[in-house]
Length: 185
Image (cartoon, rainbow, N blue to C red; front, side, top):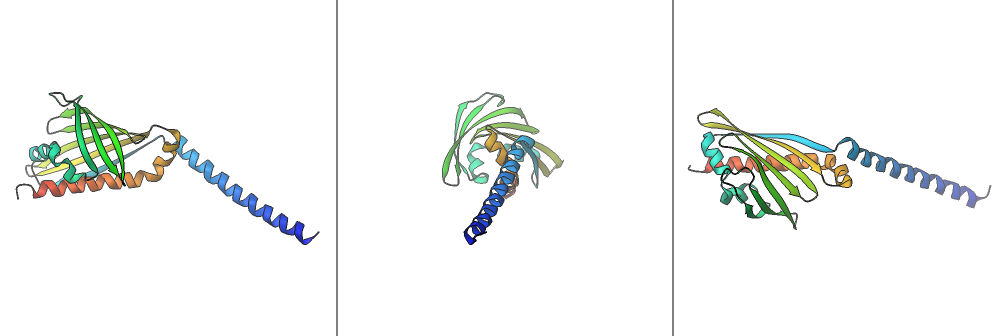
């Protein structure tokens, strides 16, 4: 066997190994989209303020950008008296690119629950906020989140970014806690 044939065989082995690795990684990536078609997580904070005050500040649109700094504008499209069924257009700054989200209020129970549905950026997101009075001066706010993808490829990426999304929502809740606790102090 000549040196050239031997070198060619070695190169072919490398190519086969690299192609095998690429194929395995691709199969794992696409399997993620089949196995995990949605992600769910829960975030929670305890706020040292009465429930009615926490709920009021939570629903004050003028303070929303103070605790969710990525929001650049909120435009009401349809507002109902009961809030349930209201529809908004929200502009978000996502690392320098503008994303328009549609927000619908699915449920609104005074001092108890607000359930919101967001569509945009290739995802469907449901945020279910539960307000609980731990005592007269302490409120627990629980966020239950469900995220689904509009496309299969984005769905393959959801499990890879779920911890980042969960961390971001927890950060927003922490910002909200700071805002509420410094109000009226």
